[in-house]
Image (cartoon, rainbow, N blue to C red; front, side, top):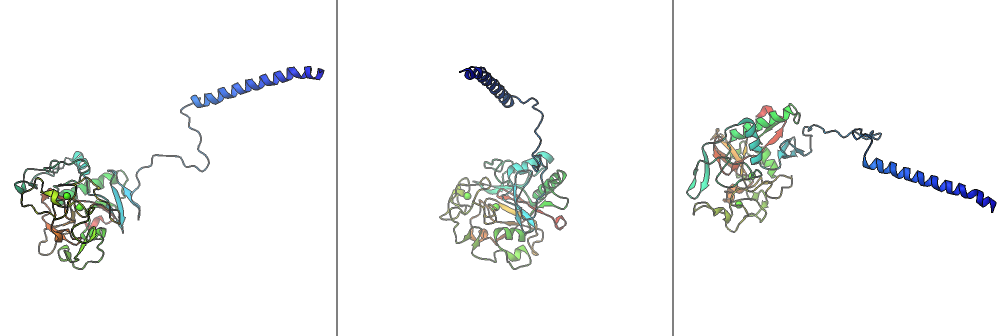
Length: 321
Ligand SMILES: [Ca+2]
Ligand SMILES: [Ca+2]
């Protein structure tokens, strides 16, 4: 028994010491969780872990999608990048707020009394437009000024290289985006309508249910009684739809067909060298031949219209403008 008596204080002492150590450990652990001794001090990075730094926006890389400073996604297409969506009201408004560029005046719009100048502008085209809708009522010159502004803004921020710039697509680039790889003819005018039966959604007319925002029977709202629409076709939008409106094509690009006509940078053709080129049709388009992927509409580059907008590309060939 003696040995037991001798051991008892040791056991009690050992137990008490363990409790003290346990309490101290809990206090230390709780203290670490609740309040670091120096909250501004960051722990050293683990070996091989790069520090997390807010990186500046990197310029577009070959073959990779890219998002610009306005939040617009660009899709690689050979040696250019094409906007996945039509230029929005919010994008054009950013341009306007920065420059006060006046893109108003002389705009034609569709109302009950016909298609003419009602004093509308891109800010109020005669129908509701949210910031996510495509800008309408802008001329090719307006679009070019937008591209120039955005190029300078993003080059200044290091988001584009000095060789990269925004511009309108060429007629051939637009064809490539919509899936027309091989067309004959030296000018857009000569290529217009040559490939029959091929539409931005594929083959067959009228468009399928998800074919795009065209002038279905819904487009008669607010239009003259004799306004032409596509028989047996109806979509959810009597005017523009917010973008992206319809599912992207195989390249990831939306609304090439319909919603708004899109400016290209080329002249239309020899017969009318001053005219510009519009592609793709719009919410106001109903004639099958105008909805063909290969159709080109010759149009005065200074005209503004409530179903005409644009999308941009980024290219490294600024000299070709
Ligand atoms: Ca429609
Ligand atoms: Ca379009």
